[in-house]
Length: 282
Length: 265
Image (cartoon, rainbow over all chains, first blue to last red; front, side, top):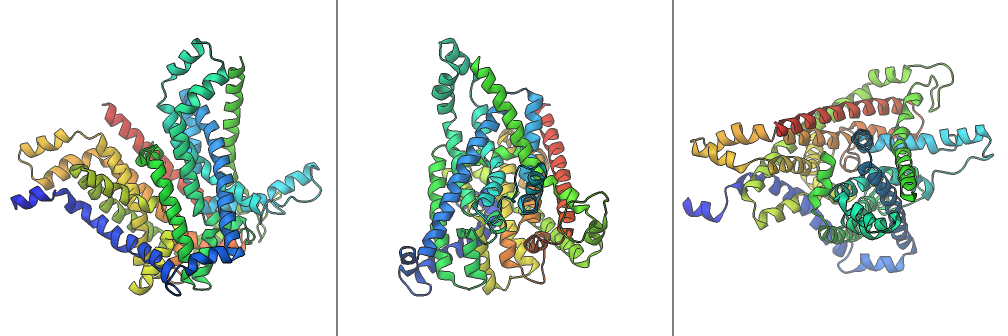
């Protein structure tokens, strides 16, 4: 018993239940999907070769990547501005802002997507109001195109972008900025050469986090894209639930998974991953 | 001073963005009060008929009930597994256990669509498709990492000497766990339970794949309503969901306030 205790820490006993559950019921089938991408319908790299052969498939991947890049740029840019304002205003305003941010973070994705549906439709509130004021004669097509998908996704991703940035900005010693100004640097100089580099880890973490989350996003593109903007996640669901073809879907999932893992690895170079999530708890 | 101007400009911009984040969801309030049978803004008179329908329709009520059962079960199971796992990892704290921790956080970050595929793939041979058990297990695997994070955060501020003291005073492992460790990480456990509940209550992507007829959760029914895009009952359901979110959020704020206060003391 003594030797057993020495070789295996008793703590592992209570780690085991969750670990076993995740390995058998989660990791197992994911490995199976990776395996399928090489074996279904026939062994080989056939599924991956389809990327080179089929224009449609390539277009879907490209649409996904493009939308993710634009979403990430906007969410992180706007998120940076929010985080900056939050760090640099008084405690009361900061608390209000944090509350609004977390409430929006917590509101169900379905509720939010539904709201955009009612706001952005041809007869939606936005078009209705613009027509009433006489700004536009014809309703603007906000939906069933990439614009709608982008609005919905950026709206969803901004809180995710803000939280890592906030953590990073809060750890900066404000006296550094004062020192830079005292030494004669202009406002923009000290921002660009001192502040921005100091927030770089947070910026990278927030960029990668938003990009990863956007890659597999399903709900908003499916609803606001209205079938016109086909992204990888929706394509996978159609393949599995309608046409029952595992091979292509597994290949796309494998690509997505490798992409995500590569980005996670990159991210871990800049930030402890748990702090990214931990930021949401306070 | 240019930076002062930029400062104010940025702050105004940030407030506008905040409104952009929160206000769109509020549109479901007026729409849910429309007297008409289709999705529209009410003009003049208001009506509660869609709320009435929501709370008398057997389908919607059963969805509320099913989502409630699944979310509560998920929350209990995920909180139990996540908490003991976090304590285990905290006590082992070696290189290997940190690796295990990183691995266990994966379900949070791996795209939901891939998780959905994985569960769908395995649930077919296991016969768990379209069952309570299937949804609860899947949601538990997705939610347990949340609990792991919140409990680990609480443990980080727990003094390990207290555990030693308890053992030196002759308490067994179980007593130490029950009377020393658990009470001091309670806020983290509750926050984790709340997060797990919300995650399951809101979950749609995995649910779309592994449920069909007999289990029809609230998000699933909302999803259908959104796709059909005609019935204002969905707006009423959205209002109820927003109210629940705000209540849950307030519970969370009170809990975390109590947490910081007990830390100060």
